[in-house]
Structure formats: structure tokens, C-alpha cells
Amino acid sequence: MNMMTAKPLAPDFTSDDLPMMLPGRPPMRYDLPKAWHHFKELVKDKENTAEVAKIFEALPWRGAYDAAQAFLGSERGKAIRKSEPSLVAILDDHDSLRKLPAGSLAHAYCDFMEREGLSAQGLVDELDRYRPAEFFFADQVTWYFNRMRDTHDLLHVLTGFGRDALGEQCVLAFTYSQQPALAHLFLGYAGALQIRKHKAAKVPVFRAVREAQNMGKACPRLVEQPIRELLGQPLDELRRKLNIGEPKYYHQAHAMWRAVGVDPYDLMAPVNNAA
Image: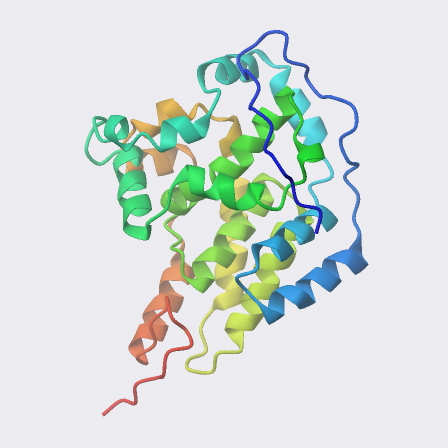
């Protein structure tokens, strides 16, 4: 595998002199044979993040460069880039986030991340393990792409989808509607198919994933929102503002699994027979 040897220093994303998009970025093209090969490898080892990265390389968001440049060229995009050069620095500062009002997105986010033992920097480190040094570009598009990565766990909190198997597929489907890389849709529905094979109860797995996809369409693109402002707002009120509805099929699936003694966070656990 082409692994990086040293991660380049991050550029000053607030600089007026930072190029919009440097030449040499790889074209956004589909490579279906490559995607299928790495998916088969992923099935063998579902924890192999390297295979996921390769699937995203093979099934990218083909309009990503255009979307990034359109936002970065807007007055709104320029203002957010200057005020939020790094979401990692904002999101991992739990001491500051805890000073925001109780019931806000900030508190819900800290609760989620601390309960799950996660950090924004941890996700960066995990993904950068498989990113060749020549794929680090000191331009504004990198800032935009970083936000696509760094808002992942915020999506879990905003949507209410957990880190269980179905929850992760729902977040992938939601994200597809926000950042339409075909890999999101492919992995979301392929994962749903694997979950559907669990015979403990016939639950609305595909309806849950499709519902999540529709939720993502209704919500404004999160990477283009001022995250600092969102963090201080009441979570329930914010969900209404962002058109994020209740994921009823996801909750219904959880209820149906629990009714037959299956923990949704451990679908391979033995089913408890009803007395």
C-alpha cells in the first residue's frame, strides 16, 4: 500500500493568499471493478478502514470540486473559512463546548463523543493513515473536504442515528444526500443487505436507510453551515431549523429487535427465547 511517511503541515486556511484549488488533484471518476474488489476485501474484515478509503476513491462525489469552489467563492463561504479554519480544534475543545447552554448541540455532541470514547482528531488520524503524502494539497478545497470529514459525528448527534450497524448505514445514506459520493450509497445499502440477513425479526431495515436518505435531502448541506453558531443552539430547535425529522423506521427497527431479545448494537448476540 502507498502509505505516507510524514503528514505535511496544515496550511493557514484563513489566508487570503491560499489557492482555491491546486493542480494535480485526481479526477473524480468511477472505477467499478476497483470498488467491487475492495468491497469483497471489506466483507472479509469489516474493521479494515483501508478498504473503505479505497471504495471512496473508486466511487467519489464527482461534483465535489465544483461544489467546493462554488461555496468557497461565495461571501458566505469566505466568511466561514475565516471564522472556522479547523473544526477539529472547535469540536475537541469540550471545556469550551460545555460552557454553552444546556440542551444545546454542543452538550449533546460532548455527551456522544465522551460516551463512545471518540474525538475529532482520532478520525483525522485514522483516515490519514491511508492517505499518501502526495494527496495533501495546501488549498481551500482541502479545507472544504476536511469539513466533510469532521462533521461525521455531528451528523450522528443531529439525526439521532447511533453507532450501531443500522445507525451507521443510515448516516451513510443521509450523507449521500448531502455529499453524493456513490460510495456512501453503495456502502449504506450493501450494509443494510447484510443486516437484513439477520433472521431474529423482520425489521424495516431498507425503509430506515431510505428514510435517512430522504432526511439528508431535506437538510441544508451541513458542511456549508456555520458550525460555531449551530453548536450553541438547542438541539430540538436546531433539528427543526435544519428540517431533520424523527427517524421513525430506525427507532421501529430497534424496538422490534429488542422485543425478541436482540441488542441492536450487537446483532450477532444470541437471541433470547421468550418464556
